[in-house]
Image 1 (cartoon, each protein chain N blue to C red):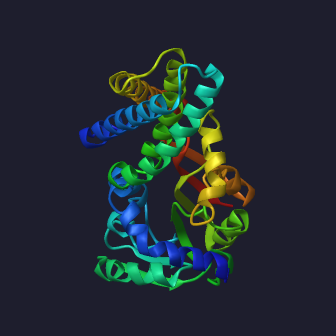
Image 2: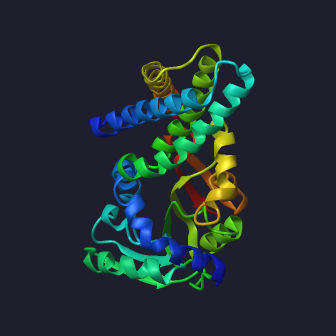
Length: 127
Length: 201
């Protein structure tokens, strides 16, 4: 379980940043007259298109799989959430930053929790 | 030698240290150092790449490091020379391992069997050159059993295989298929990055 501040801050900061970017970009593309499913699908696609190059670039600083997998998931989740919100009402930049940032933090916290669970299960099996 | 694979890793050599030399190596330093601290006797290391893992080798060991790529070995040469022990670098495809049967006490890998074209045949070759009871220690990334990570790694594999590894390999199953026994897995990150220990039968 990662506890070094450099990597923990890097993980959460990267997910916050990518989530915000994805949500803002999705909010700028999706219109409030769109069907919700279309907005969510496009948001998810846009999310991964933004998250993949971001993951490649940020992995040079913060690690490979540990960064790439949560970021790809953040891209999908933030894109879907912003796509859904954007079809209900016009999503402004500030709203997009908050929504995407929260999605990124939740995804990152979720992967930390799941990783912790898998390590705890392994320790239980060994004892 | 598999020329296509050699060309792929020659092409990757230029940017490999830039991509992996800082973040990933810093992040994986503690588990790699712990795994490689187990080195003893005559050790086979595959694939040595540009030598990023040499910094984690304990001093004073007798190690033969293989790689399929001359460009990678060229990058690794200064690091191998600086190693405080015996580290011989050899240009060799794991499928063509020509060492005598039972000539190594241990074999170690680091993100290797995600990209060996025929992983089971490669692992069988490793098992052959290990003494009976010799140990295999692997630091590898594999596919995942858990959604959505499994789907993400499946989707990424056709892209990454062109210039590097397959992201969804089941390396633990491959180790068993190659005839190793007492296979033990220690998670490093989720069920994707892991240390695999096994024994040559």
